[in-house]
Each structure stands twice: as structure tokens, then as C-alpha cells.
Amino acid sequence: MWLESFANTCDAFFLTTCQHAGVAVRERGITPHSPCRAQFFVLQMHLRRGNMKSLAWLYARFAKIVSHLQSPFLLAVRLYWGWQFAQTGWGKLHNISKITGFFASLNIPFPSVSAHFVSGLEFAGGILLILGLGSRLIGLLLAGNMFVAYWTADHEALTSIFSDPGKFYVADPYTFLFAALMALIFGAGMFSIDALLVQRVSKRFA
Image 1 (cartoon, rainbow, N blue to C red):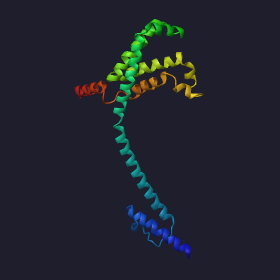
Image 2: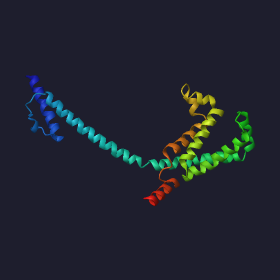
Image 3: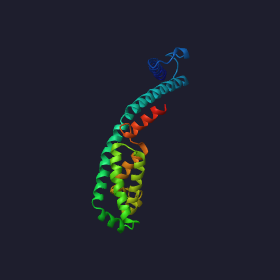
Image 4: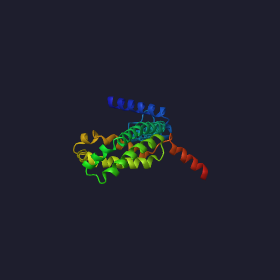
């Protein structure tokens, strides 16, 4: 008797839940006195599908809201790391003899030319990042520059990226490299000269 009572309780519970969820219980010919059989698994599947649709809708709304933070975040990255690049390049330009000697100690070909090029790239590239002009191209050049810095000045840290990741991400080029890669991969965002140029060109050829 207690098993039958338990089954009826299960039936009533599932039916009440299904009715609140808008499931057409009567159309399926299921009454509170039906046993907990395969029909209720079908109803449960309908409930789960409804829940999944609700979760998918909520996630889509959340993703849409969060996506509005992309351009402000890219602006913050450009302003901060553009300034850091510009400062680093400016410091190298005013100590070019030391930079040339350092490059020579690393066996970098044409140390004087390389020192002037890298210093100018970091200074001008930093300013262009701040402005958001040619951000992807500048990001590519600066990322290549940081890879070279890893390969020459922090080779041990570069080769330890998997065996000892701590050495890799405490090296000086790490944050500069990832800032450059972000500019390369994601671009400058809406708050940039690049975005203004794209809008103007689009209107012109529309």
C-alpha cells in the first residue's frame, strides 16, 4: 500500500510541476492516478528542454551585455601599454649607445641599426597604440619585437614556457608581448582612429 501511495504522490508532484511549466498534460492522457512510468520521463524531458532554452536565452543576454565592455577594455589596454611602450622607446632613444652595446653583447646583427630601429618602433608604436591608428599592424611589429627580446635576452625563460612557466611570465617582455598580441588579434576597438576611418570609408563606398 505504501508503494502505491508513494507512486501517487510522485504523480501528483510531477503533474503539478508540469502544469506550472505550461505542459499540456491532459492532451497526453495522463492523470494524477497514472503510475510513474515512461510518460513522466517524456514530461521531464520537456521541462529540461524548456530550462535549457531559458539558460541559453539568459547566456545570450549576458554575452551581449558583457560584449559592450570590449571596446572600453581595449582602450584601457592601449592607453596603458601604449604609454609603457612609448616610455621604453623614449628611454632607449636617449641612451642609444648603451642599447647598442647591449645588443652587441647579445650578438644581434647590426647592433647600432637594430638599436635605433627597436627604439623608434617602441616609441612610435606606443603613440600609435594610444591613438588607435594602425593598431593591428603595430601590434604585429611590437609582438615580433617582443619575441626577439625573448629569444635573445630571455632565451631561458622562453624555452621554459612549459617546463617552468614561472620563468616565462616573470620575464620583462611577457606583459608587453601580450598587450601587443591583444592589439593584433582584437584590434583597437570602437574608441580609436581606426574605427573612425572604417566608418568614413564605409559611408563613402556605401
